[in-house]
Image 1: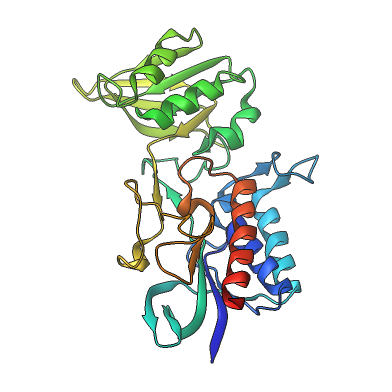
Image 2: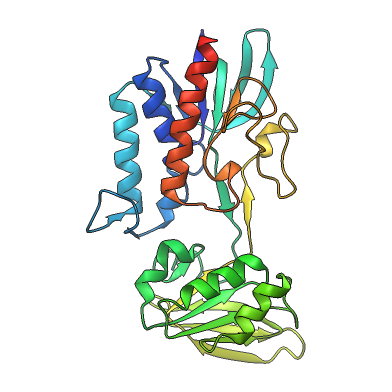
Length: 305
């Protein structure tokens, strides 16, 4: 059996694509992948998604997305796609269990935040540990927060957090930033921001929420404990594209290139991309859902043509 559409990845982009495709009678199949529901499964309160004035838990929001997609006929499989290759009928998808055929594909496999891998980080994710200041910065109004990183993303996170936090620390393992000169100057000139040079986070501490971080000097190995209410890890994201094995064109940062014939089209006809796997700039639930809608409509038109 060949499916009209296979959607690789869940989260706001994948589930929205499934919803729109199912309502267009495309009978899509969706493969959830390893991180069912995407990065919002690691988020507690979501207050910036329209329609939920009192906020909603990230996992609960993804549960609603999934239920709505399934209500209209999206067949959701708790499987991970291991590889994709072209076939005579379209595309062949090898999953962790079976092989599927599809005329078209929407890739919404997302991008995974790079983490520090230190003690306390995983346990306190959603309780003061975050990889998204735009998502979670509001919860730390008049608090002290710490940003880890030295690139433009870290500078942007730190500057954004000054809108809410009383104090913003930046921890960087070197003696100079990798960020652009203009971003460095904005950080250096900001009265709320203090930089800890040549420091690495050794541990994130706290019982039910973040209370401090242990910093280790990269030169003399001295240990410092820094009181903080939150830790924002800004050392980059990795697009989840390993299973493609060179099938599509990627940009210089490893994200899927889109916009070849339609906004979500890729370098391979019949394959479309939505959400964070093709977005290194916005990385928001609302923008991911929007591109999921676009991708489903692009697929519908492509199949008709």
